[in-house]
Length: 236
Image 1 (cartoon, rainbow, N blue to C red):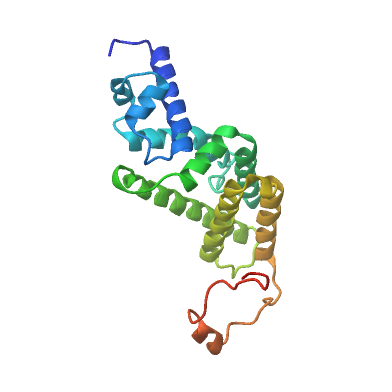
Image 2: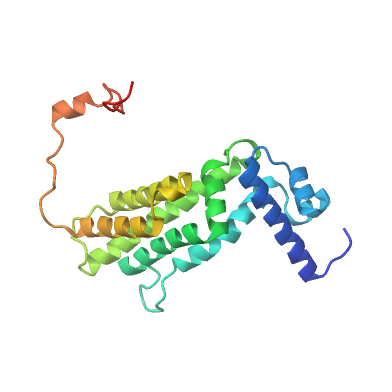
């Protein structure tokens, strides 16, 4: 490649990422080659290899470009001792910001859709599976630290199982995003997401007896012995 100015190199890199984003969304990651991306970006494959060693690195850069602002938005605002851990209010805001960005920022929505429905973590993309797992572990750890901080502040009961709560919050948010990505018109992601997160956090603060009794030995023994889903009365 001929030597380029820094600005030209940045513009070429951005163009490659834009092309990859469009093609990954339209064709799926596995069906998109670097040659396809080069043609879409109107550059040579050599230009792609100048910026990215392979498709996995290109995919990771595409995801980082869209999600890094969200991750930065989850950082605590105050510069005080213990502020490295999110308060419950900061945690709530950060999650609602994710919902808002997915709903109103086209790039954020598109990369979420790619990551959730258009990539197989196999072959050259298999290395990214560990990145995804690490991100989820970090997310759970962040949630748990926030819940432990809330216990210390008297916002949550001392007996709160922070590990279970951390996993449940990840599942709640991840599930809402998946459902909305599959059918964006089905519900207002911000309104439903905020209500769900607030309801979940409020439920952790309840000190009353559980709504349901513990499962009986008979109920436990029946697990796995019948279908997971029941047909509706109107189905054939």
